[in-house]
Image (cartoon, rainbow, N blue to C red; front, side, top):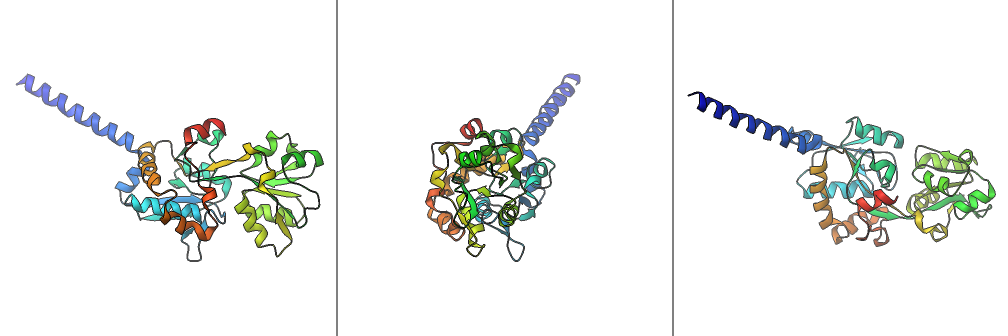
Length: 280
């Protein structure tokens, strides 16, 4: 009788341990989904990558790609959460949303704090400058030599790596602030992806223009991806599997065309997130 009781206790202990392990592996996002809660997408107001539409729906090519992949995984209960760019990583870590969809570059410094899925786009850089580019600013070396002020947010590290004086770098929360700084003359150039600064220039009524991305150093290319909590590895693996089937497909290219995303933006197969985290 005693032996039987010991055996039953042992079996129950193993079962409980297995359940606890499964819960630990699942991660907070899987737990939310199991509880019937929506998947919360966190992003800043960053046209054309991610922003709120007129009816409060998530818009932008990163958001649309995310929604498509999640739908293929069977998830369509979504809640958008718009915040400032600087609040994205802290917000994810604090559990205020579940996925950062703001077109965030995959960088080593960020890989220490969040877990990125495989990249969804590759982008070079360009400057937003006054029409005619009166100070002839084409790249970070030009900023360094001329001693002028540049504004940006995701590209700040490239200016610093080129030796630009930190006092000449205006770090701003996002694209609207880049536009305002260059328009007001507080910055001589604003750095960003060609598609981003192109959008800003298009709305300036000819007062601003975009420099040639080819003038930028080759190592200025970055890859963008979605960021998750480091505890959501199981979900990330499933997301990557669905993303692999979707990225570059006719369905995807049709969905993102209106945002300016072209085949030139596809991330390619040569560099995965592990490599990018170690080299950017």
